[in-house]
Image 1: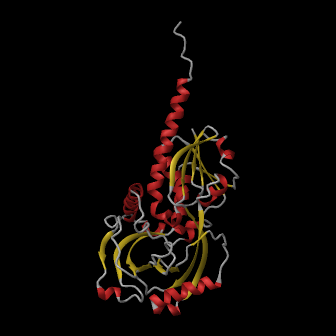
Image 2 (image 1 turned 180 degrees about the vertical axis):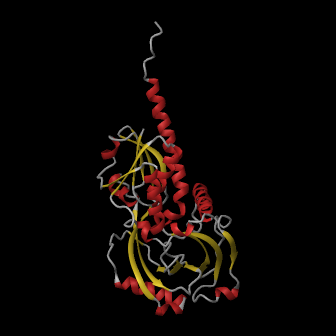
Image 3 (image 1 turned 120 degrees about the vertical axis):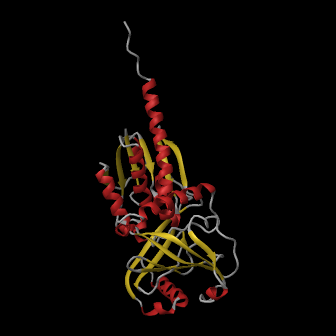
Length: 341
């Protein structure tokens, strides 16, 4: 049976791998306008942490599946090669807030002491946790290689509508991200523009996520150490399609980071990145039909694609396998039984 995955980011490639592992006989192709290193995920810091409180039970399940999967990979001898590591750090607020519903999924969740909270100017409350980190710049090439070893084909091309692929494949897995606005006319998907400055600052050992509850997530300073460099950000500009670099935004990022950790002032810049997160009120993960072809939608992860990727991929694979079973059952029911005479 012929299956296509539309989308070459972390959600698309992980969905392809889960489908191929669940249905190894499927003839699978990944079609995308861009592949690594030019996807949104390639620029992400890669912290495994979802929204603070607005998390559904279904999303908690996807988070748990992702965390469990990455925890198994973390115990391998190649974890660092795929950009996977463990890190502790802080979430800070300007007032007391409820605990997040995912506190028992990450490790070592606790509240900050008063003395700890005083380290962060303008913030008086917070949490300390240990979570997993996954850098897609290393992870996506590894996923790509695994898929190729399993015989999965790759096509780099831009499609104008899902109808283009529906006529050539039995099942479509739609992981198109922000392109859902044009491919599906889903106007609920919006760009969440982000800008990141990467610096050489090996003395920074813990992540720091500040939270301004009057704005959207990731719209106040954050500092996230990676394997080799530290990512500084703090922008989530909804509805902004500009992928160019803005000096005024860079200044805002620097000012916010240095206010939190003054030693960053002299850090050497080693990279800059701008990207558009595919923001949607809720992730769309469901079965649909386009031109009589089963379509499994898996998009709208916003800034949490890495956080939910494997759980959503597993769910998409379950839906895809059911669609293939339905096609097989329908095909067999149309067969004319051989005459016994």
